[in-house]
Length: 171
Image 1 (spheres, rainbow, N blue to C red):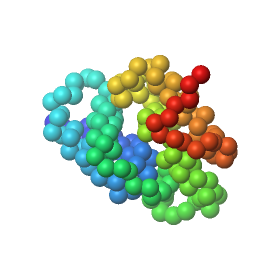
Image 2: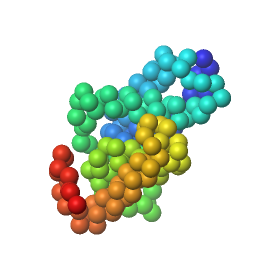
Image 3: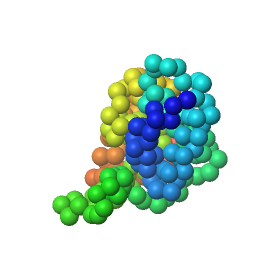
Image 4: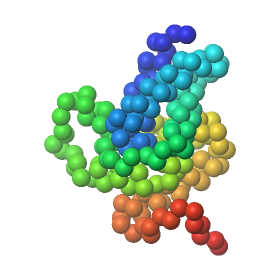
């Protein structure tokens, strides 16, 4: 195994983990768990296939396992915290309240919608790549992305009805 192949993907994994978990400490733990799992399961990666997609699949599976075991914490971390740390301070031209509000709204999305939205928008993955990472059909990716965008806009506008897990609207 060549660890140098993994190093190039760590910033993307950290960014996605922070947006997914909403907590800096949990995100760093998720990245570490992902890298440990990737190293222990390295033989399962097919040489020549998309390493980035494989790593995100590993991360998704690790995160899903963690969510099943314990509920996620509800602390808020700005989406671009990693970029913020690199530049060493606050961007005076950026509205900090808007980014916190976006993070709060993202954390209110159902996990399956949030994962699709973040992979497409934050990680710039294609629908096919997201489908491969999450192990779902491309049509499901498009459907979840559409519902996530609508729900996120409603939450940001303050027009969203409260989310009631387990209840579905029937037509």
